[in-house]
Image (tube, rainbow, N blue to C red; front, side):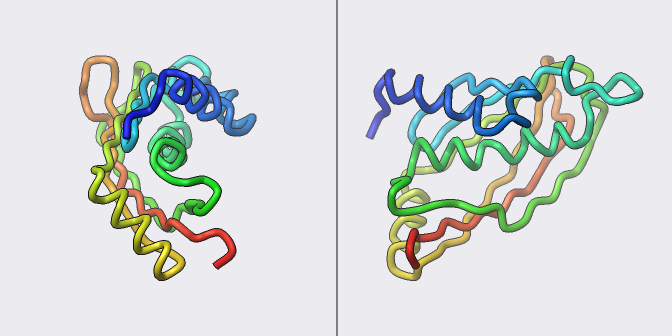
Length: 152
């Protein structure tokens, strides 16, 4: 089921202004579809004391797609996600804006929904490549989320 342009616009706006911390980081949701998002975090407001992107900012842009995928793919009146575990490996300094792209297959969306409906919760996970403006991977994170049924 494809998202309408209006839905995409609303999800992008909501994702970029999830809470004040995300706004201060300057995160932008570049593209969304059901089971897909691409996000960018600019270098400038996220510099550390040595002139590279702050490690916490990299962690943030690795974690945020979980909420966007939730908004694009799941019934927000029936389910909500939590971060269950996350690990990040830094490969090289981030000296440019950083982008991430996540894709969750339709089969995985259906599995998560069905299991959550039946059991009350369902774990799911993915790996995230954080890429600089040249397409170089600066960090890789492994994210584990849990979808929960509201009222369960």
